[in-house]
Length: 212
Image 1: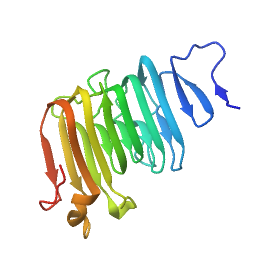
Image 2: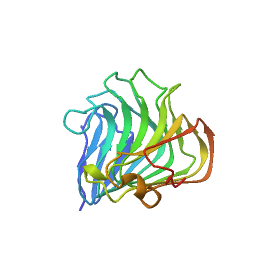
Image 3: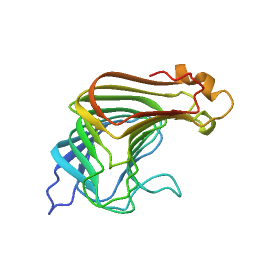
């Protein structure tokens, strides 16, 4: 049997399928998924989720609309995510296996302080369907950051296969710890199969071992 969470007098506009639990979601607070092995699908149902706060994140860095920890498997699909709060500095902080399927992550909607739209520090990330990632002028669309010194030695891989557009800089790098740059070719992979791009790729701390 599943479970449901929803105020009786409100009508939710998208659903979070959380293993066998269905949570009915509204605009407002950020979404935090802690370390674990959960399977989660966020179906936006062709609506826009606007994070108005409070933002979420690790202790001392509660500045994200979504924070997804290591070990989980998450799919976000069919809609738009944006933020209307100056306390939101990043739309998605990701450490898990993540699929973005026909979803738009848009930093240009609402008043916010977003510098990075999507940050990837661990896991396998698939950007597919008609997904768009839209940074502000001069902002980062997403990054791949290999961070072995903080417990993410598994690495991070991003595959782009979208009919949508990636707007903003793609940043590729490591924490610069001993051995990190030498491992980049195997532990930090960016594969571009399809997509339109408006912005550059910036690489650092990889000693010519980039896998792009």
